[in-house]
Length: 67
Image (cartoon, rainbow, N blue to C red; front, side, top):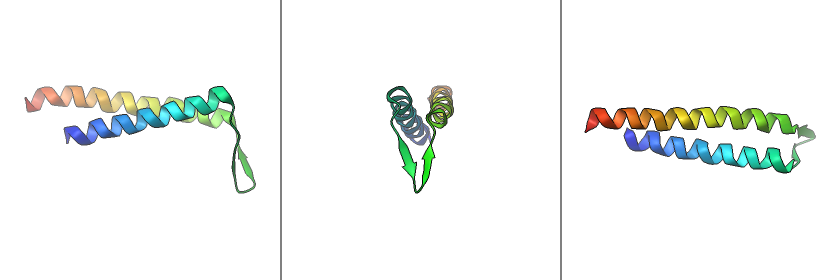
């Protein structure tokens, strides 16, 4: 279970980094005929960062119980 939480934290960290890059560089994204606003990536960055921090804190707390 510990490895799963660490991988999840890394995945969400990578996702957060990509969203931050898109926000800073103001890269356009279009899905079909709908343009995704940059502020949506800023929100996604905050959410993904929160999940990443949560996962790594859970992994750190959980590692003490298994040792």
